[in-house]
Length: 275
Image (cartoon, rainbow, N blue to C red):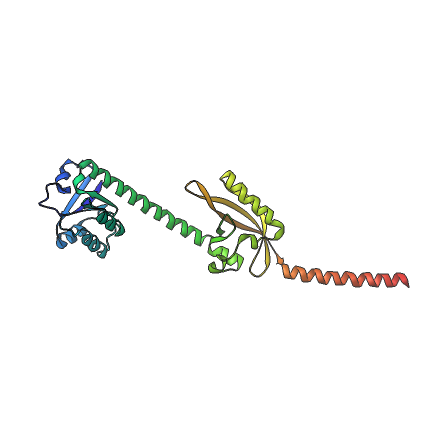
């Protein structure tokens, strides 16, 4: 069932939405009519509408659109207009979902427009709901999750990822995945991206990430392709720490100390042999 609010300013017009309403399937639509601000407010207080039909011969259609917007009621609007491109363009710029040309009004065209606009609005609302759920899961997950384009540039990172890598979100979005992977694993990353795009599924692998503090992290990643209009546009990566290693600076310093100790021992051994 679709609930329709009809704002009717075409009472004396022989070709109007009101004249076509008896031809609509009454078991699929409920219609409340309003002609002025008081009756519009009364109708809005009684019902939540799926769509608003504005039919006016007074040239105030866009004014009525503005009034609805000020009332804070978000619903798609269908506006009956004259056969004037400028009027249609102005309506579109003001957020009207569809325009019906008065001279071409038919019950079938009216019904098709209503179903199309309402279905599209419901699909957008459902998509928004899914996105809100996804963002909540993304942001509050304990797992490290980030997205990057096919060239490695970060496009998003969740809070767990910020904590793991030591970057704020703003800092992370200036980074490139290839710069945060240990050089010996660059080939691995390239192969994962290629395989994920070609197979269109998640690809799992291990690699070493370098944090902001230059710590190295051995992680297992699962990279999934993100598609739009049938094309892969970025990757969503979930990372899990396998092992936290010492920083590269510490490794270099440790290697340097070990090298000095070995040299001293070698020199001492050579002196003893010479004696």
